[in-house]
Length: 422
Image (cartoon, rainbow, N blue to C red; front, side, top):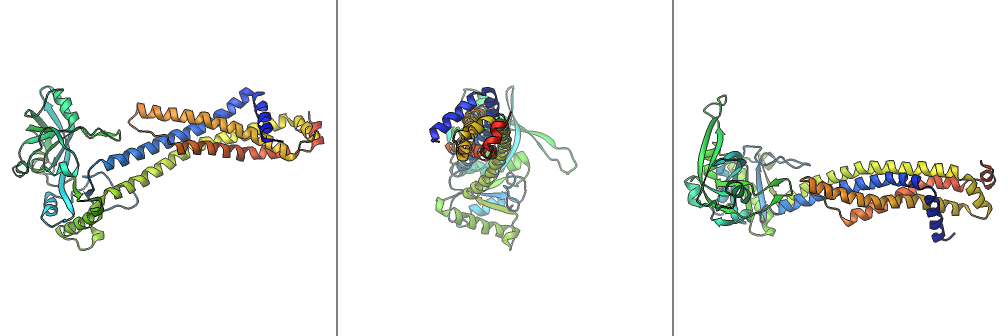
C-alpha cells in the first residue's frame, strides 16, 4: 500500500473518532509543551547568566575569600573573611602581577539611604578608581572619586543610575548629599550594634547597565572609597572580592597564576591546595555556571519527559482499544488482500499522526508558556529551533514506540478469527 494511501486511511480512521483522537492528542500535547517550556526556561537562564558574567568586566580575574570548591559553584562572594585590604595592596604593588592592567578591591554591604523623606535599602560597595577599568563601567554625570579620596577615606559617593533616579528623580544628584544609616558592632561581640549614620557628597552617576539576567539590578548601588567603607561604614577590612583586569584575554591565565603566587606569599601558605582563597577567570566561572545550568535544564526536561511518557502510554491504550473495536475491519482488509505489513503500517501511521499533531500543538503551547513565564517573572526563557525540532522528533519516536505493539497485534490477527469477531 502506498504511503499516501496509508496516511489518508489513517486520517480517515482518526476523524471518525474525533473526540477520542483529541483527548489522545491532549496527553502528548501537554508532555511536549512541558518539555519545550522547561527547556526554554533552563536555556534562557543559562544564556542570561553567561551574558551577565561576560558583562561584569574586561578580561576579569576574580579573587574570592574561602577555599576552592569542586564540582559545584562556590557561594556568593563575601561569605569569608580571608581577604583584606592589605592583600589588594600587595597585588597592586609594582611588578607583583605584571600581566594585570588594573586591580580593584570590593567591600560590600547593605545600608539604608536617606534623602529628605525618601528611604531606600541598597548595596554599598567600597572600591577604588580602578573600578572603572576593571568593570568597564564609566560615569555619565560628574566624575569618579580619586585616589586621594581613597587615601583620606573621604565621604564621597558615586551612585548607580537606578539609585540616582529613585532618590533624586530627574534632578542631577551631583553635588547633593545622601545619608547612610547602618549598624556597626560595639566594643564586645556580645554588645548591641551601634546605630550610626554617614553623610556622603555625590560626585558622580554611573552609566546604566540594566538588569543582571533579570534577577537583580546592577544599577541599584552606591560606590564609595574602600577606606571609607572599611573605617567609617562597616568597621572591618575584610573584602568581598578582589578583581583584576588582564592586559589581554590571552594573559588571563598568567594573571590567575601570578595573583595566586602573591596571595600565597602574603597568607604564608606553602601548599597551594591549602589556599584560603579562590582565584577564578571568567572562563572558569562560565564553565562552572554552564555545568550547573545544563544540569538544571536536563532535570527540567526530565520532568516534562514524564508527562510525555504518560501521553505515550495513553497512545498505546487508545490504539489497543481501536484494534479491539476494529477487529472485523482488520479481518476484512486481510481477506481482500492486505498483508500484515499493510495493517502494521496503517496502525503505526495512526499512532504517529496522533503524536505529531500533539507535538506540533504542544510546541506552540510550550512556546506560549515560555513567553508567559518570561513576561510575568524575572526568569528569562529562550525557545531554540533545536528544542522545537527535537520535540517533534521525540513525538514521532513516541508514536512509533508506543504504537508498535498495538499495530503488531493488529497485523498478527488471523483473518478468519478477525472476521468472526463480534
